[in-house]
Length: 175
Image (cartoon, rainbow, N blue to C red):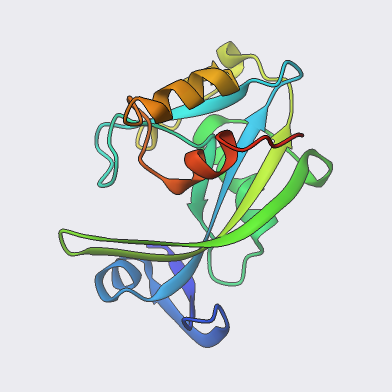
């Protein structure tokens, strides 16, 4: 069972800790991270979510995403999630903090109130060397910025319908 620090609606720590299930059942605010990993050609590595995921099964998603465990820093969570989900070893020098945001998802009794930390990671990765965590990830693939924009413009065409894609790929960001 995973436990998370509970935050108030302003993102401040309350001093409480709750289980993943309770956070999503009662809508407690908690922290999450996500990252886009780019190669030297400017392509972004996306993961296809496992078919058994509660949210967005079999959809292409950010490279890495996950919760920040109680007492953990966002960067630590990112390093841990990269290793767990894809078998990628990164360290602090590979990571660039982009932005903090909030995300709210409330559907079918599942409430997800997150304070998110978004990161960019620049690292050349050979997809054949990755170890995919079956419960989380079914596939990975490199996409160009234009391919992602085309999918967004085509009703997200297989992508998760998350604001992360809209915000970062329809704007002219630079690494």
